Length: 84
Figure 1 (cartoon, rainbow, N blue to C red):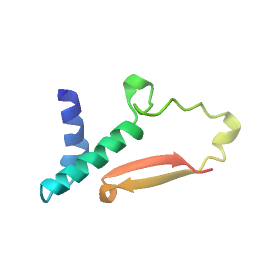
Figure 2 (tube, helix red, strand yellow):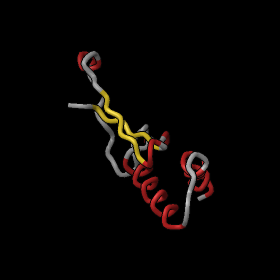
Figure 3 (spheres, one colour):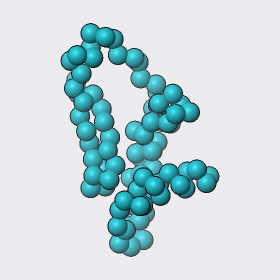
């Protein structure tokens, strides 16, 4: 539990100005979604907890790889995905 509390503090709360309790709850909900659906975890072989592991890219696809970035919470959190 201590590790989880330290993570949102370092990645979210130390970088954002929180105005009130409603804003804090919204920011923590968005961070929880990011943490469980997009953020990589070393213990899960760079997968997110609620997503399956992605297949490795073949060498011929790496040259044509396009990556899109999505921002959450005004740019505090970044999420990346490949564009089809």
